[in-house]
Each structure stands twice: as structure tokens, then as C-alpha cells.
Length: 292
Image 1 (cartoon, one colour):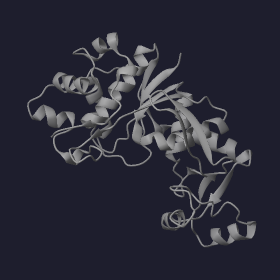
Image 2 (cartoon, helix red, strand yellow):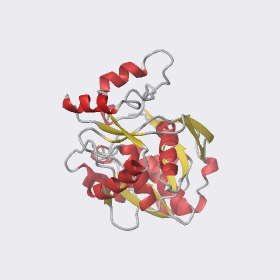
Image 3 (cartoon, helix red, strand yellow):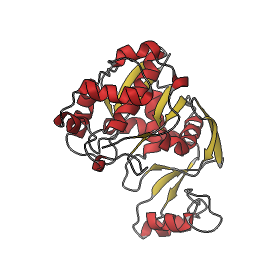
């Protein structure tokens, strides 16, 4: 048996919706006899002190994890090795497109929505040389052999989504999220991924990349999000929604946990007590609207 995981980005404090997803990831893992690992996905935006506060908040609502907390910024060598395998297999190419050029191409008639159109896929050696001479640092993309890929989700069933030539390494040399998360999950023996259903559409890309790298594809469960009162995805600007804000307003961490549990129909006043009756088949299938 492998592990489940929670992997927040340290761009700010976790709000109550994030904590809800973390609790679900923990319950899915622990109820199936899996381990549970915590990873900080810090390749992109990082707010000083956010990771430490996130870790403290998860512990405050009763979640525990196995082994040390892993940070992506400490794993560049592992990502480089995976990318080198793809380069040696002839499965990559350099891309010189700017973000604006990609957006304009993706909005053209007949372009698959959200897909990279393959502008740089067929560049000749002389064209690549000219673009290098212009001084624009290239990103590195996967040369995908399929246009779509199917996964099986515990809550959504079979889901077929778009696969394009996704970025593996950005022009500034930073490993792209999709590559890092696939490599990390395999390296940490994560065979169960529970996360918000806003990420469902990107999962076929990641599953396909895992297949290309000859890595195991995890099982998935994409859970409903927390929304604000206007039906938008809950954000920290929506009011007192972080644990520290709610505690400042007079609640305890235990009461916040009970609020989350009530939104899920869970029984118990602690995370461990909830394990006794946890059944994914009874979870709500609609978003949770948070009143602030």
C-alpha cells in the first residue's frame, strides 16, 4: 500500500476550503490503510512564512503525516534527471513562444480550448538557431503522442481530458509544476491523489506524463470545492476564512474542524474519530457554499 498526500502551494494561508480538502485527503488515505505525506509545492509563488503557518494549521485541526515535510525547491536534481530521460528519448522540443503568443494562438478558430497549438513543434534547425540568436530563452515542452487521455476518478468515474505539449521546464530554468508533481508523487509512493475538482481537467495531462515516464498512475478523487456566497471559488479575500482569522473571531480550531465536518456529513469531533464512519460514497457531490 502506498500513500495519500496533501501538497499546498505556500502562496498564503490556507482557508477553510483548503483545510476541508486536506482533511478529505487525510481521511481517504488513513481509511484505506495508506500512509499520508505532506509536500510543499513551492516552485512558484512563495509568501515568506506561509509554509510554516500552513503546517501549523494542518496540525491544529488534527492531521498528521508520515516522514518529513518535502519541499519541491529541494528536489531540482530529481526533476532534471526525469527531463533528461525525456530529452534522450527524443520526446521534447524547445519552445520560444511568449505567453501572449500562446494565448493568441489558443484563441484562434478551431484551436482546442486551453491547448498549446504546437507552434514550435516543427521548427527547423536553422529556425531554432535564429530564435536562440534573438536571445529569447526557450521553454522545454513534451512532444505528446496523443491528444487526450482517460483517467478513472473515484467520484467522477471515467474522465477523458485534453493532452497537449505541456511545458516541462520554463524559460527561466524552473521545473514546471506538471512535471514536478508527477515525479514527486511517484518518488513518494503516492498512489492516491485527493484534491479539488477544479484540477480534474488537468489530471489527464499528468497521468499521460506519468505513463510516458513509465511511472505508476495514482488513483484519483476530485472533491467538490468550497465557494463563496456569489458562487465563486472561495478565496482569502472573502472575509474571515483562514484558521487564524476564525480563531481571532472567537472560534477554536476544534470548532472550525466541526464546521468542516458538518459540511461533509462526517461524524466525530476529531479527525481520528471521523475515520470510524468515513465512507467516500456518502460525501456531498455539490460545492460547499461558505457564509462569511
